[in-house]
Amino acid sequence: MLTRILDLFKTHAPEPLPEPDAKLALGALMVRVAKSDAHYKLEEISLIDRLLARMNDIGPIEAAKMRALCEKIEAEAPTTRKFALLIRETVSHDARVDAHEALWQVMLADGVRRAEEDSVVSQVREALGLSQEECDAAHERASST
Image (cartoon, rainbow, N blue to C red; front, top):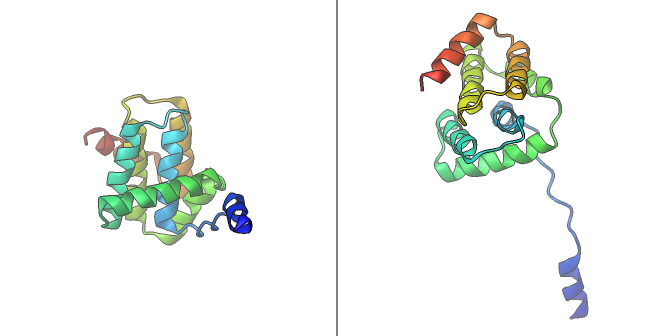
């Protein structure tokens, strides 16, 4: 009996995180953009959930679970560039533009544009192989939604 009780206090190794695919990498990048200014706000979290649901054709509960996984991946994540390169290597050019627009939406979700967020979005644009014109157009579309 005492052994079973003591076993409850033992820390179990957490399950290893999955290797991110393009969908998880984009989710982790959205989380990274939202957290880059050290203010991870409810508006940003809610928007990430809605974007994940729409982009992956899943329901809100699945999207929230996916975002939670993306938060864990982002916390242990490699560089922003590595995530963006994973997306670049595995999705179409149009999907990369859509991904960049999603990052702009997350950045603008709290109504405050900060240099830290700009830096992450700029790094991603370069790693995704998008032009400044494509970035500007994505920003414009994100601003109008």
